[in-house]
Image 1 (tube, rainbow, N blue to C red):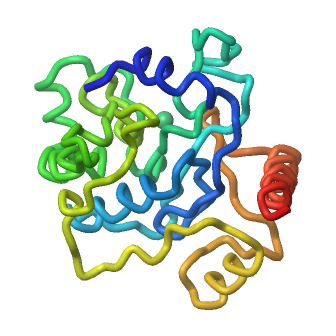
Image 2: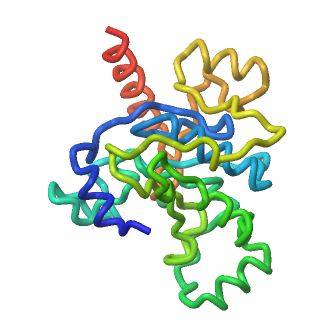
Length: 233
Ligand SMILES: [Zn+2]
């Protein structure tokens, strides 16, 4: 597994940039530097038998320059979370807590068995089996190392980010929810019942430090819209 430092280094040009607003499980925009990963991560969850739970949220910290633990994300990458790069996703954070005190493997097994998280070793292994087209592990999970059960991050450099879809597998559940979010897509998805965020009342945002305030939501939403306008110019 690539260390977080290594990934920061590979992707340093992406620090505090805004990726594409993308859905995962039809939930809250995830900011990703490549929407293909999010689709692969989502599909791998389905294939491993992990399905969204009602009321589960997806988070991706976008409140740069705030980095890890309230510190400022530095130009050299110090104190930056991979969320600051659009390279990490918190999957259903309200069902997969960050149990900071879990340090030993046996403690982690206890937590799995107690149902503290929706993940189990089998699900995790199947998602970790996703490879890029160079045969390298696509994602890493911080449950084992940090007790951060919600947290997935990219494990490859930008030049080797293509997903080997044969390693993702296939399930009855189609990857239909991860797509770039524009107003029309959002409205249609809401109408069809695929997402819970009514575009008329503002999407629900989550920042790793906690739920976003109304002002933060508004700022994030405006930023997305500005980015989209830039891209379609
Ligand atoms: Zn995280």
